[in-house]
Amino acid sequence: MDSFIDDKKEKNLAKLREIRRIRELNDIRKVLSSPEGRRFYWRVMARAGAFHSSYTGDNNATNFNCGRQDIGYFLLDELLESEPTILAQMQREAKSKATREETEDNKE
Image (cartoon, rainbow, N blue to C red; front, side):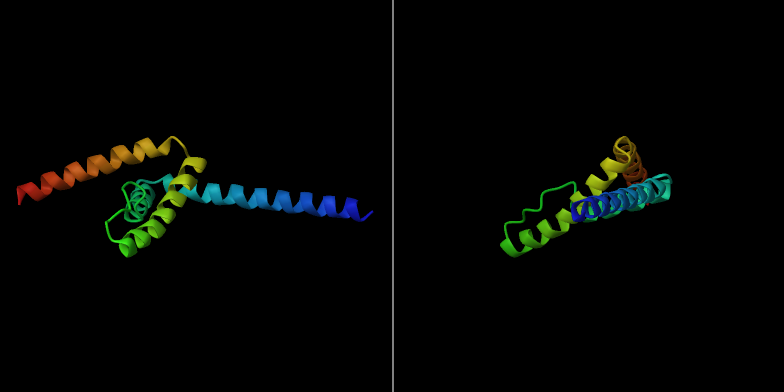
């Protein structure tokens, strides 16, 4: 009898975890649905080092960067799980923004 109760409890917990995960992924999709959300998400991933090496030549700085980069990879992984095709769009938007800002900077 205990096995039946344990199995039922485990299934209920699994279902609850699945519901929570769906909600988390939907939260990310909501953020990514707007240009502002995509810009913010991209900035945080970039700041966390998701797109460049963490190596500096100094062990302490490299270790610090690796910790920060782990967060960047987490955000990237969450993005790819929730909305896999959006990364290419975010890359295009970031490149366009950088080009626009460079043009503005050169005008002054």
